Each structure stands twice: as C-alpha cells, then as structure tokens.
Image (cartoon, rainbow, N blue to C red):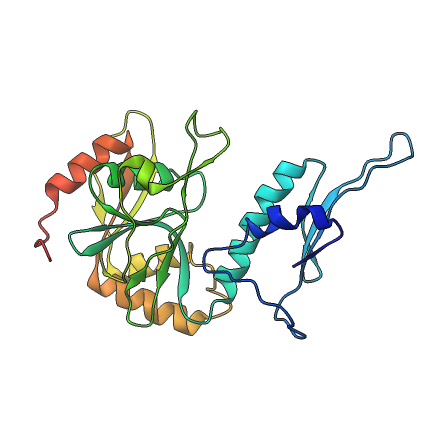
Length: 257
C-alpha cells in the first residue's frame, strides 16, 4: 500500500482486512495498492479527486474523502477474498448454533447483516456478516469483523458494531455447515421457505462466491461438499427477529458440546 499523503497512513492502516500484518523490507509484492489523496487546487473550478488503484485498475474515484476510505476498505476485502489460497470466500453472514453453522448467503443490501444480528441477539455465536470462509474440509471458519449495521434504515450509512454490543460472542473455530439460507426482506412477508436440492444450492452459492472464476474447480468441489451436508432453504422474510424466532423453533439439531 502506498500513498502520496503520509498523514493518511494511520487511517489506511485501520482499513486493512482482518488478519493483515505490517511487514517491512519487502522488495516484491503480489499486489500494489495506491491511494492518491486530492491536493488543494489553485485553479478556480478545477476539481481534484481522491483516487485508489488496485494494481493498475482504478477502483475508487470520488471527491469525498470519507466515501473514498469506505470504498477502499471494501475493495481491499474483495482483493483478499478473490486471491485467498486457503479458503473460498462466499458473500454471506454466518453464525454458529449448537455446533453447526447457519450461512445466510447474499450480497450487500439483501438484509444479511440485520438477520445475522438477530441470530446473535437470539444466542447464536457470531462468525461474520460479510464472508463465509469455506476451508478444504467444507467447514466454515470465522471472519471476525464488526457487524456493519444500518441503524436508521436500509439506506443509512453502515456503522461498525462489535458483536459484544449485541450481547454476543465471537466464534473461534471452524464448524460444519448445518443450514444455508437464501432470503430477502419483504415488508409483511412470512417465512415460508422451500427446500433446495444440492444442485440448486451449489448454483445459488456460486452467484455469491468471490473466486468462482479464478478457482472454479476448487470452488465447485467445496460448495458441493457443503450442499450435500447441509439443508438449504429459500424464501422471503419479514422482520428479522420474527423470522429467527420461527426458524430456531423449527430446528431439530442435536445440541453438541
């Protein structure tokens, strides 16, 4: 990571993805990210943009510094998710309930963070509200970032919320997947899902899998393993708390230590 504004280094460090560490003396890197902060212009009417490049690709261009930093954080996470050599990253919220993972697949603005938060408030252990990290054994590993919750409506700015603020705890170890949910919020809806076949489940997960094109064989193998082991449900839902209450009431998983 490089920048033309040394004063921005502390703020850029705060955007680094979970698990990142600072190293020095590296002469060769896999990716070079560049943040060019807009400098004041002496010419009247000339606009200066904040720019962010992932290698040679322009990923962010905006006049708003806060908006630039918010999008840079997203781009850095996508970069890691796309090029991870260990796990397959799937857009999803994840919680653990009685020893198994509940995976809530979906991209941004589908309500997965609010549903993840509702599960945490109901007693589930938190894994992530952004990515399900599927390892070679088909288990899900934690990605412990704060929840991004829009507290004043779906179009409000997301606020980083530690899981402890919801009365929850963070998962520490990989677990098997017990259930996969594909759901969208619709005001007034009731949770009446339909079950998906393993083939339908794999196709639905592929739509949310970051490295599907870069690592198709590996991604398909891991998604198939998950789809064969877990139940998959699809349907619209109403309020998150009511859907979670109904869902957990219907679960018949054996309680595991």
